[in-house]
Length: 358
Ligand code: ATP
Ligand code: MG
Image 1 (tube, helix red, strand yellow):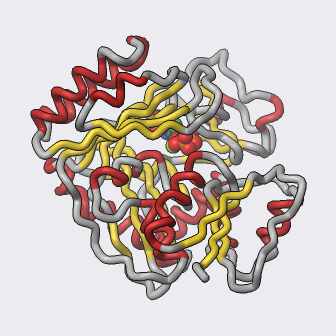
Image 2 (spheres, protein in one colour):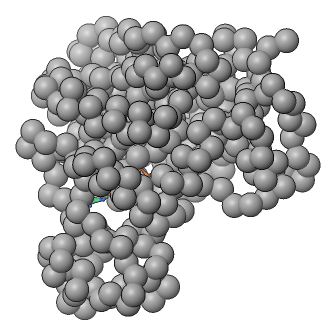
């Protein structure tokens, strides 16, 4: 019988893990945390998660009690931005300077300590730029219910945003993809480009940072590290103990996708180095209706999540992979005409410019 792996959470990441598990003969079962009945867990099953934080429900309690919940103690530690930052500091890894928001500390005190512009982030629950609050002027205040619930970060005047996705197996071996260049607009990821030859100079630095974290946590599976590039230095923005949106390009652009690596590591299978295939661009579909014309583009593969379309909501992504940069560029231009102008013209322009800077 094939190995069963339960996924805490049944969103798009869970679905893509399930998809990746089929050729590996893994029975991957995402579970909605609000299901009325608990999953029928067997002692030999494995448990992992597609999200780093979860409320207590019948389902999450059942899964959390399983003895083979891989990385169980890591999630809470990284889901809380305060304990995540403390871990990064303890390991002596560069990150945006920060303070805990507690004890009625004022906006001006935070700006005195961290600089003119300060970004407050809720300790838990934020995503896609939600749970953020800027302090830019003397009039800006710490929202009342944020004391004890947030951290404050110095605004980093970064050159660009770069992420590293890596996997560590149970034997402690780590494998990394090439660095990915990311465009965030209003705190939401719109586009990723990989690989980029010019980022190779930063690869060793990035791998050392994430490798140190993976080893310190004795972590098994895929983790993503979002960074800011400032000159030739990387600063950690945040860590995600799971498969990550900036690694979606690996579905088309690598011999082993991030989803497959995660399952391989969790199921204690081999995790050989990935072969990276061609030039890749990933475009997120955000609050955009499905357009069948996307299927006409030969270099584009659309992943549709089957969710209700709402403004600002990630409802799918398109991986563009080509043997040549020219092919990818042509596809991007065609795709640009099949997407709403708002934000997408910027995302397409940005991707084309990134390919110029190879
Ligand atoms: P995700 O959906 O990736 O989990 P998130 O909402 O949890 O995102 P962050 O990744 O912390 O939050 O921030 C979202 C974006 O906001 C970043 O990608 C970056 O563009 C911007 N940002 C975050 N922190 C800073 C900072 N200290 N200085 C400048 N910009 C920042
Ligand atoms: Mg982020």
